Length: 200
Image (cartoon, rainbow, N blue to C red; front, side, top):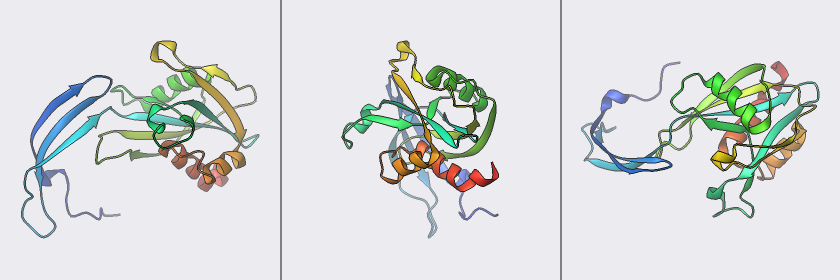
């Protein structure tokens, strides 16, 4: 299918990128102009962009028991809008510059849930919030035996304290429906599985 937009990256002119913060994350200040729908070029635009790199998220699924594995950990960014900032999520981690996303998926599954992954099925990728960050997430479904899964994991050196939950897919979807599960990677992954389970 032909792309809908008449524009591409050649229609953007970036005049400068300046690092204005470099800590746990990096923030760059972009100055750019771009083509306009009615012709011509925009005025100079300034935007601060969070540069956190790309990430991988994994939803382990046991087709024998029709169950999924989700992890629970604190997310301080949720404190402002949720009663509890301990979220149910997919396993996830930063790619740290690697483009071997399956390797990253397997490493994170071992660190965050003690899981050795076999078959990985690519679901999709998406831009997490392109108005403010360059981050793209790559989502995978992992077919796994979850009968022995459970426990508390994470790397103490990274401040991780992660509890593993295994639950029927129907329960996970109910928790999605009542908005207990409300982080994008997990929402998209569970919806993808619900839509595609018949062909898995």
